Structure formats: C-alpha cells, structure tokens
Image (cartoon, rainbow, N blue to C red):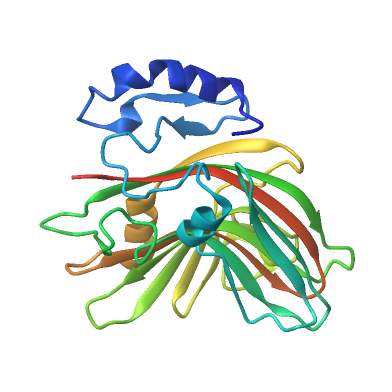
Length: 260
C-alpha cells in the first residue's frame, strides 16, 4: 500500500499483541497529528467482516469486492474507479448532473459471511469502521455546486425499507447551507430528510491522507434508533454531486469490524 503515514507503521508493529485483546479494538487507538483517532484494524483483526479493505488483490478481484457503481449520472459525466493498491474515484460532471459514484463493501460480495450483518439483538451490536482517505481534487468553481464526500452505510429495516447514514469528510460550502441540517446553529447534521441522515465529521485538507475511525452503531442509532431486525447492508465511500464538478478521491484500508 502506498502513502502510508507513520501511525500505520506503528500499528503494524503492534498488531500481533493487539490480536490477543478480545474485549475492544477501540481501546487501542492512536491519534494522528490532525486529531483523528485511528483504529488498529486489518483483515486479520478480530471481528473484521469484510475481505478486501486494503485493495491488495488482483484488479479483477478488487473490482468485485469493492463493487463500484454510479447512480443518477448521465452520459454527459465522466467517472472512473480504479484499484491499484488503493481505490481512486475520479469524476467530472456537467451543470445538469445530479448523482453519485460509490464503492466499498457490500454484503453480496464483500462480507465474509455473504450475509447482511445483524445490528441488534437485545442491545445494539457495536460495529466499527476505519479507513484512510485523500481528497486530491474537489473543484466547485461557481459556488452553487453541491458536493459531498462521505463514508456511508445502508441499513435494511424489518419492513424491507432501506435507510442511509452518511459521515461527510468533505463538503462544498453550498452543501453546508442546507436548510435540512443544523450546521449553521453549531450542530453536526448536514442533512436530514427522507431516508438519509448526514453527519459532518471533518473537512479534509486537499491532497493529504487522513485516517478515520467511526463507531457506526453510534451514528446509525442516533439517526434511526436501532430496532430489532435491522441489518447492515453495506459500508462504502460515496461522492455525491449536484452541478458541475471535478473530483478525485482516494481511499484505502477500509475495514469494518463487528464487536458482539
């Protein structure tokens, strides 16, 4: 893997001892210089549920396990997702575009169990996600574009409906002005409406790798109040646009762990 930062080298040295700890991964964490907590995870870490978080397989296998796709975009847009020791999403949209490109872990391909993950027994089950991201380009020249870059997850409810929780780590200024959020009053909700709740977790510096660790259970429960039969369907990096933008986002080391 490329562009590794010093904390991750330390993690690799510490990993054998950490694998002996079965109480909680999050008790062993290191903060990077930007103040983000980085969980110590790899494909061998206890409780990890996905297969190819480090993009270490062949191009064909990486493409299967990361399942890249777009929704809403037309032939006027140009987008690609590549896998060469890291995942890279590149897209260029026109003024009339509205849609997203997503890639990550889906239960049908990426989860070791090939099944959706139960999120609730007698209490919510703790699910953690760690990943690294680099927003290389995010061009919103006109100022009215909506651009969101996030780690997102989809949850299937007992009635078969699906709801989405997104943790934005880069937003265009116009996105943060949404009347359906509370950023303006000091909150952390970018948008709440319909089947989506978006939280603001960071505004990543362009061109820099940043590590993130998220307690997905905490965000999902806050957004939707977890209920019996709720299932985790997917965890993925998503780039959402309305308007003309040029975006390049790199991601690596996306690991999801379930702690019973």
